[in-house]
Amino acid sequence: MSEKIRGGRSRRELKNGAGEVLRSPCPVACALDILGDRWTLLVIRDLLLGRSRFKDFAASPEGIPSNILSERLGRLLRHGLAEQVPAEDGTMRLGYRLTEKGRALGPVLRTLRDWGLKWEPSTEARMK
Amino acid sequence: MSEKIRGGRSRRELKNGAGEVLRSPCPVACALDILGDRWTLLVIRDLLLGRSRFKDFAASPEGIPSNILSERLGRLLRHGLAEQVPAEDGTMRLGYRLTEKGRALGPVLRTLRDWGLKWEPSTEARMK
Image (cartoon, rainbow over all chains, first blue to last red; front, top):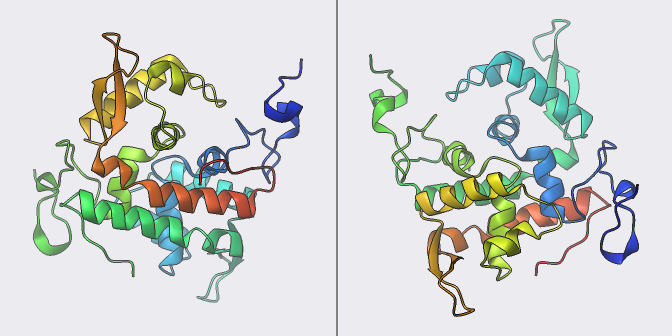
């Protein structure tokens, strides 16, 4: 059965760019379906800081487990937030870089950073 | 043993306002330790929209399960993002409202909303 929501549209019709059904039409809920966990925005932070390789993300001080990192990088690709590019070291390895959709998360990262800096005194900024 | 991080400080010394050990001094990581899940920022969205009672949050279109809602409201209280206040209906029930620290998440919600609206065409705004 199709669950009806505000405006009479079927919930089944509401999907994000990766074809996943949305919980609601709310853009915050949709964003959190993609970004709402402890790690995804940290990988995007690292990409914004210019890191591109799996081992660079894994070396960040938070110590992301490699299985979670693999899953999150796959999610970034699936949602069009990042793309794979040849590694700059000339090897056959692939690196990652943000797409325009991924770079557009810069303001989200900055507001989260500013909030943390103001309200959690143990934190320090590195990203400008 | 005490794990040393950049600057020679002990990781044990880095705690957030609720006394939980931080993954790193990064303010984004610290913010995500509190907010990094699919639901917490939706409860804050509802509080910013003026909702105050458990049943109001539970009635939002995303359909938050009541056990998760209870846990998240407890987390907001523990981290000083919300406080309990007498319900406006004159009953003995308690409602919730944001503290200054919680209201300061408004810009985070707005940047997430703006990103969702721009990059996920199935979404629609209600929060100004």
